[in-house]
Image 1 (cartoon, rainbow, N blue to C red):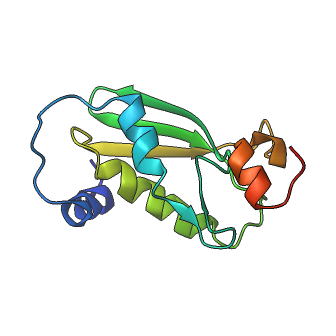
Image 2 (image 1 turned 60 degrees about the horizontal axis):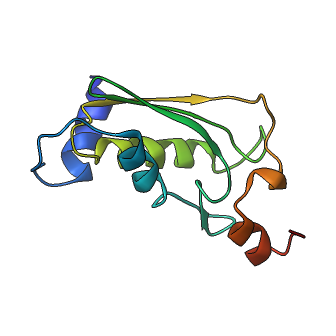
Length: 120
């Protein structure tokens, strides 16, 4: 565990209680609390998270941003790491930003597209 992740884990949540290994569902549920500050929607509904994996006690996420020059990219990555480290059983996190396939509004949930005014 990196020193940065250790500090984030210490401040992310209080004591863990279940002792169960993390699940992909738990990772995705945690990521619904990460909100894009520009679009005011969570990154799961925006379709920014492509894949979640659990590798022992390490949470791994492949995600993208709405554009390579996204001004909130560093902030979102920080919040994703923080959310993952708050999941019971997660000791470390790895977030990979990928650009293929490129993000498009079609990746959003139907609810997100409706709320943002995209045709469904």
